[in-house]
Length: 405
Image 1 (tube, rainbow, N blue to C red):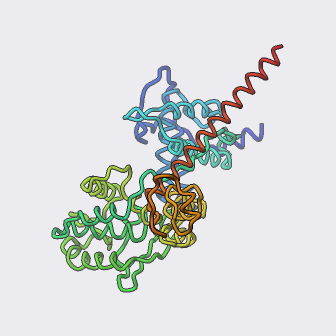
Image 2 (cartoon, helix red, strand yellow):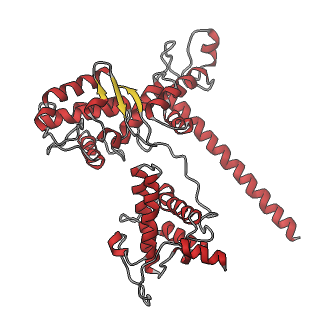
């Protein structure tokens, strides 16, 4: 009895609300859910996160995810943390899995985790604060986040086409060129670009300071000579015309003299990509991927790329080595024996060359030949897998038949 009384005393005061007899659809807006006690606990949780210095971007993302859950729970008459059990959370997890976006597509695994993981953090806090006796989200079975490759990779020529597509005779075109050059030279994220201040860029030293990047970490990265030249031109010719005195010293200003939002930068970059005839999904992140991949292909050490991109773990950076295929193709073409075009340096080469094969000078193996060899190897691997799968199925059928006898 003493434990129950103590627990009840530590709980937040819940607003009185009439009993719900029918379900009603509500929005996830806090004012629409003010009658639900879960909203009070959510506000206290976010206040605690701010006190212990959680990133504002993390708090905002969790606010959105928890707000969606509270809206879902309110429709089902769940008003208090004590009403939430593990079966309830598993039911919500199935709801998230079956949810469809406006285009009819399901949520990706990463998007599903983005809605579930904040709930785990929230209920863990509720348990530690003695608002509930046990954590219903502690042992949820969550899907594994896939290690997917970047969906779009711009070639050097495509990047140059996008950059040259900016009309630098106009102030907005010059500003766009400077922003794209910074994105491509440094590989910073779009919210990091939006947050750059005047004193964060040193065009003389060729350095750029990213303050409070992902994970609330600062990092100093190099800024290439070409990017420095365009940023300097923007600072001399465009920014003085946009500055209003209330711009918070932002480096890049919009037409109203205010700092850009990350979403606005993404829209402008996407429009520039479309104008260049590039339909890859994504916008600013394409330049981040291109920066890392092109540097890796030109011999940059992966540890330097990790520092440049601001990755906490090397595993995150290593995904770009899988996209960088140029070095692999070069080594494969030079060392794999099953080449279509053989180098005619010796009589043995002449005798073993396939009939009708064209001779190519030494050291001039083309990219098309390497690509053909690479694809042929993949096809053989696929055929071998199919054959092994058929053999395994046949053995399984035979074993089942033997068991029935």
